[in-house]
Length: 133
Image 1 (cartoon, rainbow, N blue to C red):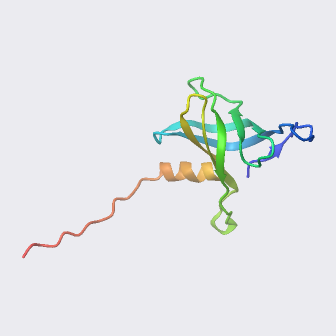
Image 2: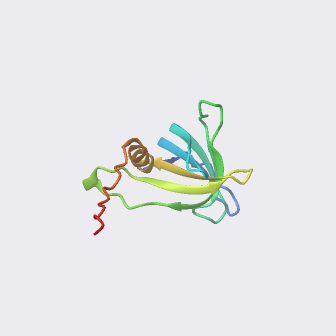
Image 3: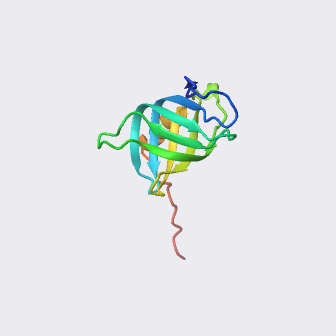
């Protein structure tokens, strides 16, 4: 799972804790369902005071176009891990950037699985057509 290392918050009430997420990989999907970023990245996450989930996340690595993924994290999903299926820990976070665009970030095992799913061809179900009598 992503690792929350190097916490820099002072621990005093009202302080904002800063964590570094080591995302191996990070997959960012925009509100249109398109890949905005895919690759390994360290993300600086500043947690909101008194909230375990909400905060501000900014990648320290840019996309090939020079865009740095950044958003206010509003919610997250941490799916259960199943080692029997060979899945790594990970999580999915949802948020909005400064311009109001929504993004979904897939981190670590969740990103790996999503990239596999996007890479594999989708089979069209066979439809049987009954002959008209």
